[in-house]
Image (cartoon, rainbow, N blue to C red; front, side):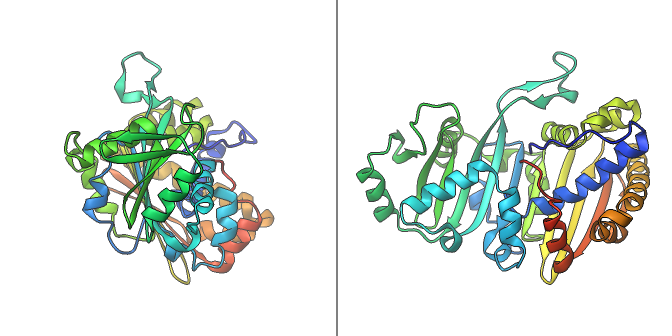
Length: 351
């Protein structure tokens, strides 16, 4: 999750925590566009395709999300370039992403890590990442692959699969595409996509064998049209990027460095209900973080009262409470509030 937020208007801890709280709230809804989960459960056969070392795993029920009147506008604000590229690639071959791609699951794999103290794994964050995803829908692999061949796209073999390159096939950011079957298309950076093939072939261990991460995926799975789970490194990265100023304050920075995971679930029908869970290192950490976020929301609610009434109303509806080693943030929005927030570019965070 890559986001950049402007510096806080003041350097007070209250302002920083307020900003952190509201951006975390926004993060729940922004996940509706890119990255992207579902009211029905994502099958373990799909989850098992992903490499064991995935650090961020997410899902979106695109078929359901497209029924929301505000989704096209939110998609324009939020859809990352790599998914736009993927959609264009499919469209060029006669596949309509808006009708044929119904569900999307993807994972991020850290490509190198860093930390303030060399070798201090507890504070490490990814320095780069590779993406691998699966688009579920209805495809005609034979006709699509025939088109790719006519276009003489660069191809590579991974066991009995053919990988088609989005670009030259040689660039470090080039993405690749393959059909697993008529309902499953996979895409991603070459090395991690080839690892997915190895997982499917039984040579590499898959995500189901990640004893700490998979149980959280299993917990989030099936609860909403969008859900996402982040491991400790990606949790720290997300918190630092969403509110970098928080590192200026020792107490808040320590809480962030010790955070374990994030779980996000979003449901939508006549409006949006979002549930955000921050898993902390201890019950005491969770209690402290909850207090800071509650104070921050009150401060942000006061700031937004005149400039953005819909945002203020959303914050009024938000609830934050500790629960064991977790801090749980619940949000509720109407469709009209969502539309208004989009018009204010509320969700224009670059992912």
